[in-house]
Length: 298
Image (cartoon, rainbow, N blue to C red; front, side, top):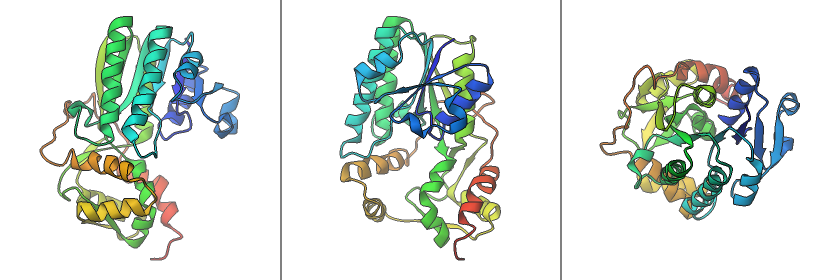
């Protein structure tokens, strides 16, 4: 069985790769720079240098594969949704040209809205385009609708060190939080399992829905540092994001992922044993976040 994996050094992709290796698979990994692979991984995979925005390159890199784990690449441009459309065109061409048997796509909670959720709209476009291609080719497709990644907190280390996380969502609004490693486990299982076919959606909700107030309490206990949250205005958040160097287009796309899910949004799939994964935020923060804050003053 030949399985191709995109973003093999990413928060989810690297765990997909190691899970497949442990399952006895030698995956084909697609990335811009094979030199970024961990030394211990290089001898266990077939690495292909590829730009995921290049339809011809993606089609060539996925010839003769049975299954594909696809993640739309990150973008920092002025028009993120145009970049998502370019990546979507590449994966759709690969599916159609190579008649890939199954695709597992890393999507997000909120993609079911289809419009009005900022950057998530790009993932929604990939979902619908893959569905259309699959209808023509007979490809089996699973869309993983993932919750909020624990690792997003690593992008806010400076704020964590000050003891206050700024957010624009209501502090008492619960949402799904999930460990990327758990997403990878679901993805690898879907790639390998013969027990499904057709077009499916698999939500990955983590172990519990958490409010930002609960998150602050968990982080305080796990890291040993007092951490709180503060709701700020949308415009204040825009100013913060622009201060990190984001383009105006990217700022609006990032903002939309929160504002678009802020009022009355309910995920298409509810929390069940199928959508619940085990790793807690407390365990992840103690293992991965605590040491990164340990040397900060406070």
